[in-house]
Amino acid sequence: MNHMDKSAVVSIHGARNDNFLCRMAMEQWARSFGQAVGDLALAYMPTGGIYIAGGVTPKNMQILEETNLTKWINAKGRLSKTMESIPIFVVKDKVPVGLIGSRVVARRVLRELYPTEEIHVEGQPKNRLESELFLEKQYPEMFHYTPIEG
Image (cartoon, rainbow, N blue to C red; front, side, top):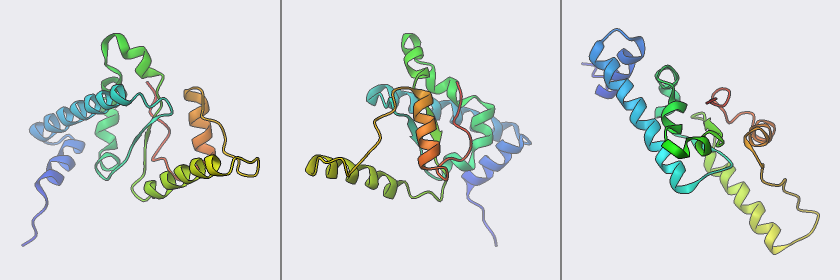
């Protein structure tokens, strides 16, 4: 007997919009997810960008886009304008985020240990556009789709 994971059933029927309860559950999940991401962003102020990784997000992109994920991430009252300046990215399942992060940290450590011009690391992007262009150029395979716009 083949049993499907209950959360997968809810996700599939919610995305298809063929079951009212599944759809409502997925919409509530998407809103709560966006609010939680926004709360973490306020706590850490990741001016270089929010990178949402893991298997759940890419599998549920349709519902996240339909419920306007960016709206829920940025809905932070008087700090909404600040939130809008932070780029938001969804990382594909297959991208080795840990290895990419390790590479960045290794470059920083090497630059501190051996401050020469031979080890060159581009400066931190100063705004959303610079961040998106830098990442698109350096890691085109990283993104599930174009960065989420506010």
